[in-house]
Image 1 (cartoon, rainbow, N blue to C red):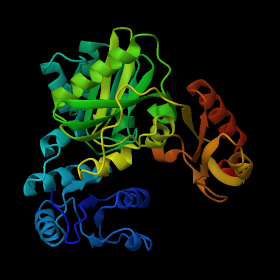
Image 2: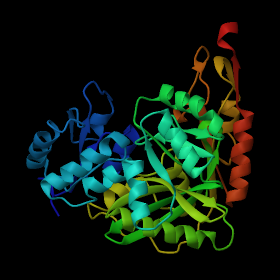
Image 3: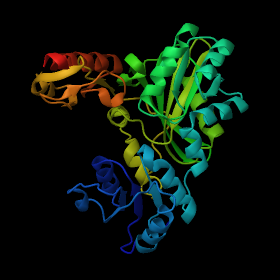
Length: 406
């Protein structure tokens, strides 16, 4: 294992939040941090051994920067837990021969159309899918595969521009709505009917995949997720089928190391893959996993490749339930926020935040960042945690008025 001059292992952290930086530093490793030009966080200097501001998404810039930083600090692995940094981290690891999941695998997971093609070739989790160049392609897809169907960006995240096509007669309006929402290439795929879950897993080496937790999801308007619960409440036998599908999927796409977050629908024909990412799940799902299993996927993402962590025990039973519910007030201008402190004082509440203030505008619930806050609750089991999170979220009032009336 490569080590830095003082004998401690070093990690190159590409992008990410202040919390990710703190967790990387908490492993005892020296952290070399890459952030984009203009980024600023006064507290980061206390956690990072070195900070470099550079456009790490620029393939003409990244190799030289990585080579120089590796020569100076001897980092063992490049790691990113944020979407823009996933491919750059894999490219750095490939360039310097540091191991980890290949960049081609990361690109495959980001390209949902290519991922569907890979699964079809492997006869795993079949779902019809096609690229959309214009509205006639969408009409042809609906004629061939029927409705409902889903239109979404080929490389989208955060539920942006995901639109359901319910009837062939809605082709024009659905196409226009999706195209207004994004200029990115679009695709269509068959609609998967059934409850949605996600699988939080970690890969310790080629073929060595461990499911850490399965997460229930609440999905609201425009496919925006409004809640999660760990562990998922599944029918007998479903958990084993979901785990088997996830492991087979990770093998087929070629994931060789690190975290994964795989979204799955439980259809009448069995579990089907929606999409996957080689990072921890967003929406505080990593916190729910930690609260219920004692395993922190974020810390593991840094500690494992540096040789600072052991595998978590296999087959561990969740020791509690945890749930998050997001705040989704009516669109409009915020007049008041009430009862946040009251909710924070509840014994079952782990965290509660409101991300808007009086005068701010709450948009229509069209994407994940349209939500206005959250409540995380922990209880003896998942059912109780879900009830408490919902109750506490409903207690917080975010009073809005239509913008034209404000």
